[in-house]
Image (cartoon, rainbow over the protein chains, first blue to last red):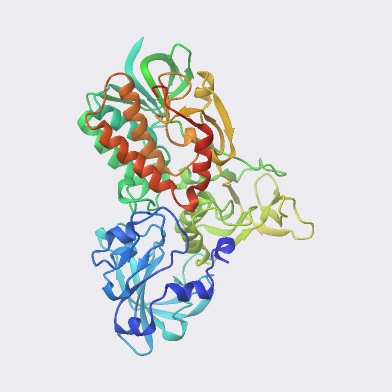
Length: 166
Length: 365
């Protein structure tokens, strides 16, 4: 249970994911923000009216997937690093999965890294296909990975082989 | 004796915002900070802040200090900033006693004073809790994020509040292994997004667990934890051992406000504000006239609310000496709305309850 160990349930995860049909159409945000906290930069940074919080900044974000362009801005603005972009339009075997990643050194394009679930357990080797770290991201780099479709709902994080044991 | 219109004690988020608003109101301000750098705890916060844009959400805490200092630049002639100086006394005649560089005492007589001294860390009692290697979370953050010193190699974190979770994350970013986060409470106290981002790096978060004892020859080598029952009593037979050279204690903060007690302010113990806090008016004035308060020193909350409280205290303290901000009514309404927004969710429930116990109507009502 997330309140006890930081791990959301499968039902919670599914509830914040857009439909597979939408994911297969192109990049779309998944916001794993399960608690009402006073925070709204995801909504105020979205230029496409795809994320709504409203007057009461304690409300959870409401994503309108149809409006989301996958522009990535909210990923770099979320202080909880709770947002990912999933894109199923590029390949029938893989999801292009973009996550914020604040560890150093950054992985390199082409590198295979360990794909981890929400407990940090190993799922599969995944390939890094893009590393973005422009100044405008303010030190929250974004890594795009090729994630096998069968672990779409389990994948959440990566570890490089040379990282300190965690 | 040196004189000023408004003395502000503490150059953290509340004090810096109070200085800005007081200066913008036209007051002469003396801002006193005991550390070499202004900014207080902001300087150690490498993570992005929560809240809304108005409290610099998505900006890293350490960068907010510079934003606040920049705001003060146009008021250079009005705001004197004194660092490396501790206010050690606040007397009945409103005179402050200052200790500069731990060696020279002098007195300052303001017309009015805002105390924004922040908080201090609570500690935990367990056998061998004085072994080298056992730190408060604030000390670990200072070592890492201010001085660039790695505190150790293997850390056990005690406390799953926001500070415990954030410091754990920063330790991992620094290449330090975090073996576990333990918390005696049955639920994680910090924001769950912080908890999840650490959990997915493989760090176990053990609620209903507390430290039984620390072990080591001269330095910390091992920590024994055990499960605790609902009254926080250890459950025999549930002990687990972790090798660790650092134990980081992050079990909450208490308001730091002895100066207010010394000045004779009426104080009250309010658990949901985390300790003794001053009875104050809705205009942030304590029971002692011309003595104002803002930020964690009047109740533990987030830095975002401390900044807004600082603005409000700056407005009211200035008005009390006849320097009313041109936009007083508009700003007062705006800052009060910001505080309301920050506190209106489920996480603000304790603060709301606590405030009803300490907030009196204004002296002027």
